[in-house]
Length: 268
Ligand SMILES: N[C@@H](CCC(=O)N[C@@H](CS)C(=O)NCC(=O)O)C(=O)O
Image (cartoon, rainbow, N blue to C red; front, top):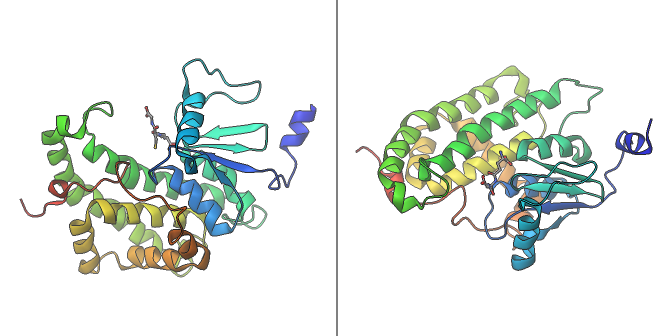
């Protein structure tokens, strides 16, 4: 076995420094990684705190001349996680899958060998419908075009998103919380906080910023009580609360969750 392979199998490498590489200025997908560190009280550095240097760090990583190194393929897009000097991984749910056991945000593999896969499925589902699709509402034609250049398509997509997709996905998570595998409905899986709860918190939070009217009505309907209850519960966790009140929490603006009032209109 090579030195590197044995290093990779070291059970506890959580003492190596963690660095989040993400665009400055928006919560974005980087927020899911920040929340995992913050909620678990894990020290990390966040290059997006330094506006110019942070953007340059991302640009260097995604530059078309970057072919990666002997162990790490290059990443297409942020977020990226650097762990020590030798690990660089990308893709939000993949980074969370890597961090989960190291940060104590999944059940112990010896107690529950399948738990991490359930948590990953919940996260992939939340990101599909409540993050990626939420982004596509304001950019339904092309990421490279301005919102104003795809507004008619965005209006059509927003109506379907509000009326069909949001109820479907929030209804799904309501069922997960009502199901026996949640062990009581306070958290999504196994009766304890996992990173899937942090992801659901963040997507519901972002949607509440982007679609305040629609989410307000869904809250009032009482049909998604458990989902909104989880949002409040996670928001009130001591470490999460302290983070949300700190200047480390970026404000919503021109990221995945954007508030365009016309995309939140009801009853047309
Ligand atoms: N599936 C990827 C998506 C990554 C992604 O789209 N990142 C955005 C920032 S949040 C980006 O810079 N994308 C550039 C592009 O898609 O061209 C993930 O979850 O990490």
